[in-house]
Image 1: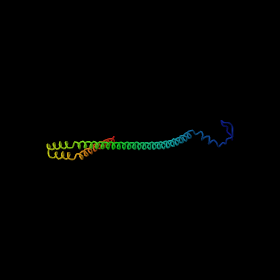
Image 2: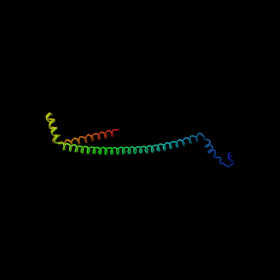
Image 3: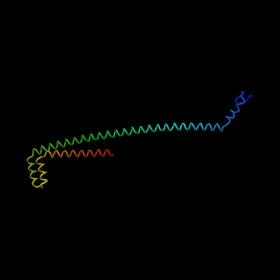
Image 4: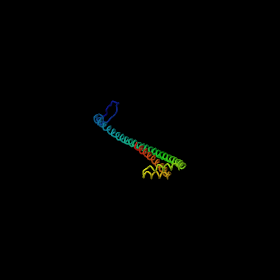
Length: 169
């Protein structure tokens, strides 16, 4: 038995009625299509999550590298500041030693009048102060060196204060 179709005439077996009925089942086909689309959406969601995770890891890695770079730059700047402070302290120490030597030479040239003036001032002081002034008059070089060392120590303390302040800011 043959059946005519809208597409033309042709011989189709009578058993194809089941296939035609399956095509006509719109509700079933819609459900199957919806399930297929749902599976595709799930697959896309998994791919999107994986891509987002990769992007997050990449951004995190870049942030870590940027933090390390900034930290290295801060350390380099700190070392430069320390070196400059050290050089400045050494320069001040050298200048104070030169100035101390110059003062010592002047005192040496005018040593007798200065020593006599110091001895004259000694008599008007109390005993502990008299001993200190007498020692300074008799031995001016160690006093000048000690003064230069104290000045250098003060400058070094100022340098340390600057470094501490730079670390906190």
